[in-house]
Amino acid sequence: MNKPEHYSAVMPYFVVEDAAAFIEFLNDVFGSKEILIVRHDDGRIRHAEVDVRGGTIMIGQCGDEWPSYKLSTFVLVDDVDAVYAKGIDKGSTGNQEPGDQEYGRAAGFIDKWGNQWWLNDPAA
Image 1 (cartoon, rainbow, N blue to C red):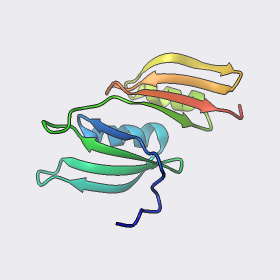
Image 2: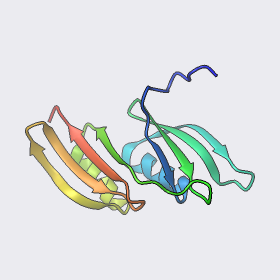
Image 3: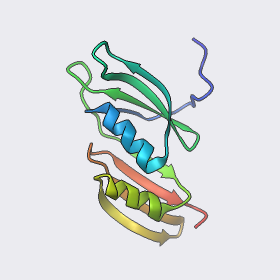
Image 4: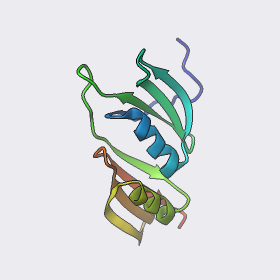
């Protein structure tokens, strides 16, 4: 297999309950774009790849063979406050309110799947 153009050396792979809802969350909060969706015979998502600001995130549906795993992911964004608000609006719990830090504007939230998202705008 040749490496797909959208692959990088390191990519997060989320294994979650309700992968379709997780992809919708990524679309709504981060403006992700779907690259690939592979489905089981019953229509559930087996494997998916989405683009978030030029980075690829992989997603799999959990099950008996593959349990759910939680991750912590750092994302560079243009508007920390807006992305944080979208995350909270989509059911996430804030654990670092947006604020100015020595490394830029930053915030953090935990999504309803238990994954931690760190947001940063170093130019702010």
